Length: 250
Image 1 (cartoon, rainbow, N blue to C red):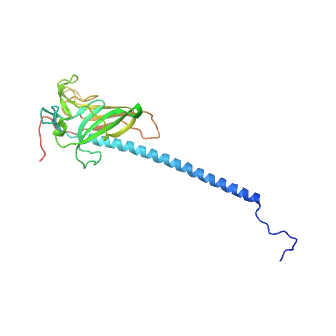
Image 2: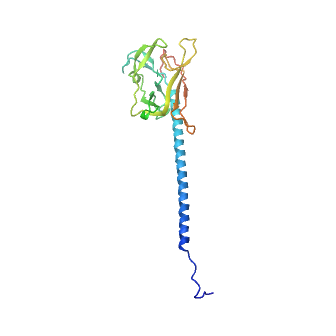
Image 3: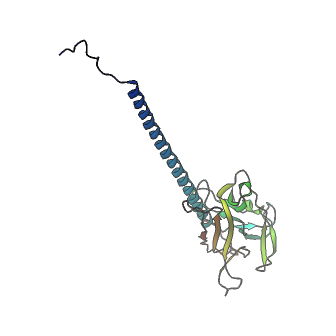
């Protein structure tokens, strides 16, 4: 049915309705963008926390495997690279530094070449707390450890003679195992001074041979219950070799 000429034309969208529609669409778009930003921010924080937890767990597992892979190496201890001086068990155990030879390599795991390990504690970045670092050098035989042993001196604590070692130094290849620590200390489960004395934990290992266990005690500067924190690591040392008896692999 046709409309008369007096009737108004077909109704359209007014300017006010158009403005309202654009405003609602803008608000809806803004809300979606805010929701996406909040979601992406939460995902980034979760991913960062997960990576931090993996880093802490991985570093602790590396330390345990390095300590458990300790090799009973007898090294010339004369303060030079030559095979001079008496042969002593190559192990340095101080409260904040430790040297040993391990079958576990930081880069190649259990399949790599044995490494001379230097674990020690240095000040943290900006002087905040401390950090645990490690140096690795390929072990190529007793002569590769001879230059690190400076000789022998009387042990003022346990008596007898003890080996002295060159100081450990951090370098460009030093690997940070744990950072932002309030403290980090080493202790050693050592046999008693007398055959009848039971083993005990000591802050320094000066006995001939190797410890029965190694403990690294550390704590973070700022504890956070929502994150995995560095904890005390205790590694048993399973060795049955007598240092005085030479042996060779066939």
